[in-house]
Length: 275
Length: 362
Ligand SMILES: Cc1cc2nc3c(=O)[nH]c(=O)nc-3n(C[C@H](O)[C@H](O)[C@H](O)COP(=O)(O)OP(=O)(O)OC[C@H]3O[C@@H](n4cnc5c(N)ncnc54)[C@H](O)[C@@H]3O)c2cc1C
Ligand code: SF4
Ligand code: SF4
Image 1: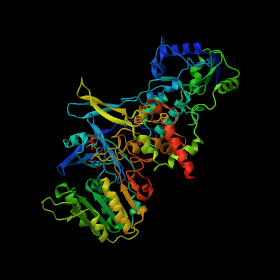
Image 2: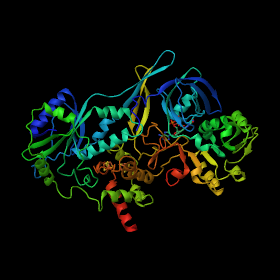
Image 3: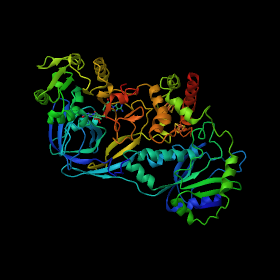
Image 4: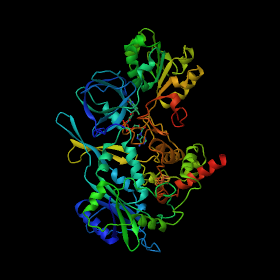
């Protein structure tokens, strides 16, 4: 148990230093923190506008002793829609970081397979950044990222740059080109997996919409990857981030504290995990 | 630590005097057969059940209080913080922590257990300061039960009847319209020290007298031990009972709202109507039986059917929360959810059916 923090449910107001539209529905924010968050990749913050509301948002920048906080916010409801109006100089309420993250030490020397569906790329970017920053510590890195149409693609320039790093392959997919120019592949994120070399020491990391997990896990299982080598990043409704509001419960676990990053072997027996 | 034998009316007068100077909550009649914990004053009418009343005509069904006293520690609409926006649009946020002193008097064993379980839950991992500060400044005066509330009660079967932990003072009805008044904590002893009550020299005898007064069985009994019930519920994921018992459920969430160990909440932000540059964030009672409880952005509902939600509610009481917070059942057997449900859905029956099914399977 941690010591009681009387401000745990009261956000700190943090300045936005950069805000850009990444797609028609997603806006990217860079904030300057009063002190480093010291987050682990995969953790999230509770982000808010006082008077409007609060929501869990993944930290999408890599960890470290820096004062940067990067978030990618999709317009999905009242708060996230209002956030699309925020710009440089405005403030955002921030609490956290919350939840479990990835332990980079475990990735050392391993091949890494990252599968992102849509907005799932945002939290995984917090892992990709440190993997690429110390490229020699890790084995081959394969990133599969899928979205609906070319207009929905996130972090396009960065993904191209990641693909140029040594021993790193980036496979970009859309479900449908929608008659737009497209230099990646067409299909679902499951499609490329069959053609990959996946040694048993690979670590696979999955984040995407609920329907994605089942199919990607089936593909990986078919390739013989053990379930304790697969991480899944789950989304649930969350109101507090501290394990109290009850909304994010998955059987006896809470997604905000025991997750959002789970080892598949630890949750596959839970009927609600991949429901 | 101090034990006294006091005439009931003298004790109630003392409560009224306390209520003149501090925030005292005491069961107050709400309707014909129902009570709620309400703030009382020096002129309020107070009553407690009588040891000698053979017909239980004046039985004081305090444990049927709706909502339960645990909810006073996490009130509906409580403020988490207030904010003020300056000319530049920047906000200053001030957390709201309620450290005013409260006394909850007349809390029955099932509710004492519920509050003790909420204390554990709220303290665990990342503590909730809003609950804990209020709790820290709250004194509990417990009251023993000599009769089950009604035919729905199963507090003894749920391991609650003997619960004392958390009470600062505990009251046990005695013959001759008297009460055994025991201080169980230092704070309770301090409060009683100035009351001038006559000391009691035969505490054990008084307790035994009350216990002997209780009917046996006390309320409904499971066909096996509580541990067996909990194990049976844990094994019942695929049971038919969820569907059968949920067909008539309205998903109204009443069973959540009246449960002393339900604590789920939603959060809301408001701007002040008078001053649009200020506002507050508040939290509101929510319930896992409500249809949208587990809906995420994009519309996916992780518990779409009433049966899935009923299973979650019951699993949470008998399996999930016990597993995480100390092993004992989070259903304290108060019977409120059954009593208040318009379509008579009964957690005792559900658990009993699962127990029977587990027996057949074994
Ligand atoms: C760990 C985690 C990380 C996340 N990371 C990100 C991220 O990096 N970026 C991002 O953009 N999002 C992220 N999300 C999702 C984000 O939290 C939600 O999009 C956000 O909560 C929406 O809040 P809102 O107030 O804008 O929408 P709300 O007004 O709450 O509505 C959002 C949607 O929820 C549903 N809904 C809400 N309330 C009800 C109701 N009462 N009845 C029926 N349906 C309802 C509807 O489908 C609605 O469209 C993350 C979520 C989690 C759990
Ligand atoms: S069980 Fe009864 S009280 Fe609970 S949601 Fe269903 S109808 Fe409402
Ligand atoms: S589940 Fe029902 S009987 Fe059990 S503690 Fe809650 S309200 Fe009381």
